[in-house]
Length: 499
Image 1 (cartoon, rainbow, N blue to C red):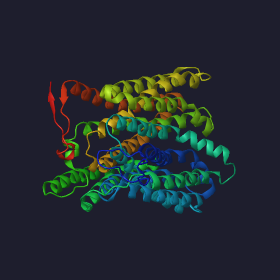
Image 2 (cartoon, one colour):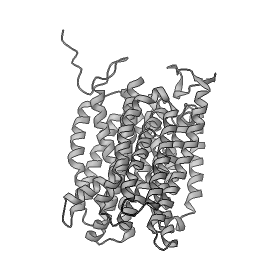
Image 3 (cartoon, helix red, strand yellow):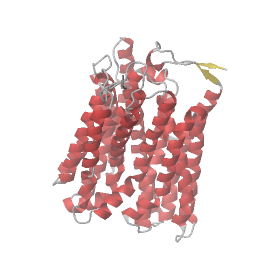
Image 4 (cartoon, rainbow, N blue to C red):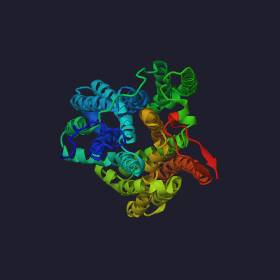
């Protein structure tokens, strides 16, 4: 008898791992990289879009903001939907929609149609993103799961850091008045190949029980996230000042969402986000809070650096992107290594990583502020490399430790909620840090070096808050022995005992 010829992409039998799991993982990582890259890659092309389409600054800003907004709104409902009706089905449908919306964005003849295409593209991205972490939970276990999450974390970190570089390269190669359109068109060949391979390699499994979607929960969390994000995504046009009243409205809606989910769970229903995921899953609440604070400081730094290098030092978009390459390189290498260390070192790895990020960014800010202009950027290269290595030890280990005790049947909703926190933190950071930059610039007589140092300092403050959470969690883990979760325990509700 020859080897078993199981059809490609079907689920492995019980107790066996899918032999196509590593190839399937790379398909999901490529798709994940593409949708996260689109958060930042467009920023460098905004001046070209504004000029070619005759748009106002406020209108063209929605090309970035609209994508970020709809991306965040779709995450939790799409994660729950994937748990209920099948992650493979949602992944492939969302990927196809993302590719089609990318083509529509690239071909858009007016700014209105471009913004509509980008918002639809964001919905597709938000539907796809939570399936990535859920598929890792589904396809891998044990040490392999940690390695897979290490690669996933590297994808998240690298895509955030290399967006400006990639956008600058595309604009440098696609010369001409319509060159910015290739930032969207480039998604077509990449997405089409990923779609074909995903159809062949992603595991086919029966969808979970409970196909009912908590529509009231969807409405509450959607309106709550919208109320919090809308002033932030319009920060450049005075959105925070005009729409500040939406923040308390959003907070009330999110509190109402929590109460509603507890009520649905108490009545034996299928909540959108089970309360035990927060209160009874070891490490989930801590990891989600840490991720939100880290992305609050991490995401805004890149916009501030881009503003400083281009407006303060006169760099081109490509040169500006290349200036932060050391951070991206350090983050990529460290994230892969971290996937192998996280099971051994646990939360200590995140603590060390956060210390590295704080030290690296603080050193870079001080050098850009005080070192001679002719050498400041070069002097900051080692500091950015240290910060990048630290970041690689934060993002992927935190994903692993946040999701490792989540039941597979809830993995999509858990991954969606985690990424919603990241998107909310990123929205706050991308509003607060550039806001600080412009405020210091105006009050200091255009002292660009002081402005970049002050705004990076605000980002460091958020990262220090994440470090405090990581230290508390690490000390708690050192004093606790965690009993393994038996299969019959629902919702990943594991208990720890003090040693």
